[in-house]
Image (cartoon, rainbow, N blue to C red):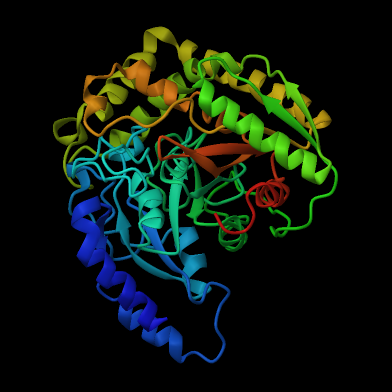
Length: 431
C-alpha cells in the first residue's frame, strides 16, 4: 500500500498542473499507508486509494467546495462515508476540484479554475464532480467519491470515460456532505470498472441515525443476470450519433444474452429540468444562509462566482413569503408524478437504458458564452433518476470524435445490486 500511495503522489505532483484536478493533498497519506501495511488483518478496501470531492468532509483536510467562500476551511470531522472507508483500510489521498458548491454541469465554475478532461484534453470534464471523474481517468487514484444531485457523478463519468454510480436515494448517508439540495443529493463512487464501484458502494451504504433518509439495504454484489426485459428510452434533443450508439450497444448485448428490448415511454420526463431547478434553487438558497461570514469562512454572496449567485438569487425569489412556496410545492408535485411513472415502468421492465448526456462536451471556456438553459439541458437525461429517487449508473460504451460516450442504466429504488450486475454484463468488468 505504501508503494502504491507513493506512486500516485509522484504522478499527481508531476501531472496535476496540467489537469488541475487536486486542490489539496493528504500530507499524511504515506504514514497512514505504512500503518495499514503493518496490520495483520486488512479491511475490504485495503489497496484502494481514494480521491474525494471537495464538498465531502474529511477530518483535517481542506473542504472548500471549490469556492473562495470556504477557501481555508478544514473539516473538523469525517463524513459517514469517509468513516466507513477508513474502517476498511482505504486511503484518502486528497480533495479534488468541482463546480463551485456543486453548482454546474461542466467543471468550469470552480473558483480555482476548471480541471481538464484527461480523455479529451481541452474539453470540459463534466460536472459538478469534475475532479472526481478526471482523477480516475488520469490514473491519480483507484476510486473517487462524488455527489450527484441531478447528474453530477454520471455526467463527468460519461465525458471522462469511467464508471459513475448515483445510488438510490437514502442508500448512502449524506452526513458530512455540504449539500446542494438535500431532497436530491446522493454520494456515490466513480471508478474504472463496475466491480470496484460495487465493492465501494457496499461498504458505504447503510442506515445512519445522522441522516434520516437512510435505510437498511441488502448486500450489494455483482451476480449473474438471467433473462431480463430492457426498456430503451428515447428522448428528444439527443445527438443522433449518441442515440444510435446506445441503441446499437444494448441491442447487440441483448442478442448475445437473450434479453428482450422494447422502447419505453415515460410521461412527464420532458418536465424534468423545469421541475428540478425550482427545487435546487430553493434548497440551495436555504442551505447557504449559514455562510454569512460569521462561523464558516466568508460571506457567500460577496465571494462566489456567477452560477452560485444566480441560484442564491433565484432561490431567494422563489421562497419569498408572497409566493407561499407555490413554485416549490408545484415542483414537488411534478417530482411525485415522475416518481410514479418510473414505478409503473419498473413493474414491466428490469431496467431502463438511455444515453447519459445528450451531446458531446464543449471546449473549456465556451460555457461562459452559453446561456444557462443551454448548460442546464445537458442534465436532462440524468435529472429524472434523482427526481424518481432510483439508482442509475453511467458506463462507457465507445467514442465519437475520440470523446468517450456513456450509457445510463437505471433500476428501481433499492435495486442497486441488480443495476450494477446488468451494467457489468453490458461492458464487462474492465472498461
